[in-house]
Image 1: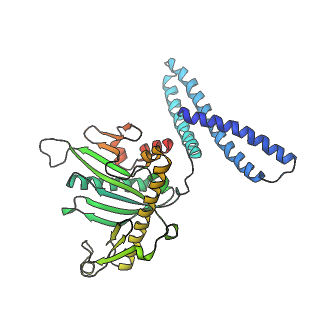
Image 2: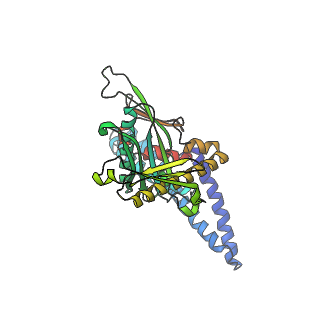
Image 3: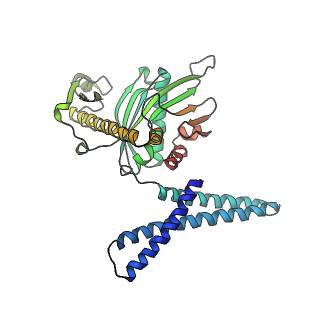
Length: 348
């Protein structure tokens, strides 16, 4: 566990003593005011310190068992016991980290995942498709629901120029909010006969689901256009003006949706994404004013704001915000994103 977190836990122990003392004073003097608040804080701090005590106990046990490894007869048993203790220690550590994280009022909300191809032509479009699969696998691990809002495929369906989806479930925004920014891939394309490494990129944006009551938008600020869908969906889709484009005139932010046959459904989906983009713009201004570090952690959402590099040739992924390098590229591309996200949450 990082020294910074140990230091924070020591401060919590000091605060616990103060709260415990205040609680006894108020009970003895029958002062009921703020007693409930103190009791809640006492319970919360007690839980954290109990986990911290268990964490230190497990660490001591590991150190004691390590001493037995000098004995050849006990070495195998010691290794097995150490592995079991480490698993228990990791579980307690994760509990502690969750208890220590600052609570964001938006953490429990759903979000929109938007991925757009950047430089690299068809390779960038293939990478968009790969990333979307990665996030879908990650959603499966957390029992989240993924609904596609809008999709633009490149020729022959080999990849996506752009895809927008809504992700719903527990702690969706809490875990995905660190993914916004430029994602770069370095690998040898299947069509490359000389074995040259190709570099391409795409932009990922995580947009918080937003209710219209959270933003002040006048109807005159919106321009709504209808047009014929160019996507798949049969004769009906391609011969009626079911596709919708909504433009917010002051910011020039435009969203279109042609996924549904119903103009009403497309309008509803497009409006929800537009609101999310406007909210995202508002939040970025706040982050920029508050902290430069926050801007690094959450990304600006621009392609030039490089968040991560996926180097398939070397079998590594590099997160440029915290200089984390991992060789678990196959696991991550199959949805084991917590390897990277947990570290971002600790840094935050």
